[in-house]
Length: 416
Image 1 (cartoon, rainbow, N blue to C red):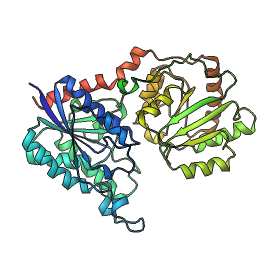
Image 2 (cartoon, rainbow, N blue to C red):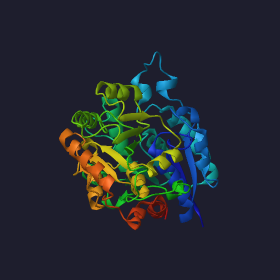
Image 3 (spheres, helix red, strand yellow):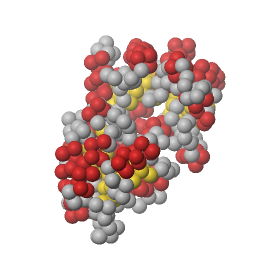
Image 4 (spheres, rainbow, N blue to C red):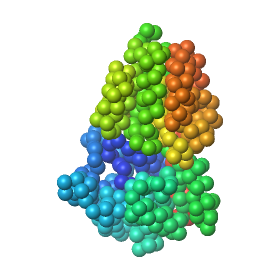
């Protein structure tokens, strides 16, 4: 007999611009192969800051998607750009807590699911799941992914306290907690020692190979488009002021350009959908890098994947304050088989995974001198085709189809 789970996820198509979409979508898509039918409870499309209508086509026909009326406090309830913080606690979509609970209650009455699951990084999803668990006594799996309350994050004391309260509810009432990295699992095991470590499951972000179905993949030894053309080094996805701060990278590039070691004819750095375009473009102009570094607008997800697959090299930025996290894009990078230059702490979870996979092109994102050497060495290795390739069978361990099998095992255990 098939079972049913109610998946509560803010990030779901047609949302654009978050890796949370692909994780939720893959779970919903592949759970059917493991004996679980899925109903997804998500927000109304107006709640997303950015959408793409074509993303809807990514939702499989066998997945039921139900949307609860939701407002974004920042965009819908602010006056001259200002709003009370209480209307954005624990996040800007708190209106979803009431509407989502009422919508879910109707679904539970009709479908009688065997379990409920909520996924972060929108904390209000966990609030809905907690309320449903208390009222309907259904087993609850909380997909925390990354740490919620951290030192200095969220920066607003009111929201930080709200995150701490939600974490306590999760570890008191959830039947299972899912995280994406060993560092996060260790952090929560120490923070909540009364919660059995056996109930903390590690399910990496991974990648969905079906999303690459129409994309011709290359490998590390594939030559650049033209021998005398500039190398195209790509960072795909958001940059953040703290977690993925490109300040030292930009400074390193400016010095390398001034020293004559790189120029626009030898390399082009492309930042696709970085966010804060005006700020980054101004900084690039101030450093005289406008011919070398380019901030590019967002594109549909599959188009972004194709761009990754055909870049000469891929950039990964992750600061040491995110040592317990691994960017989801890393797994897509790995599947595409292109050379990777990682600007991250070698002692963090991202750096450790790269080292385990034999990727040696690593420099600290905060160290300009390390970055300068790494950029020059990386360009030479790409040109010569000497960058080591990660074996495909190793990469396939991070396929979301297989990773969903571990989620199904956790659902089977809590609903037995």
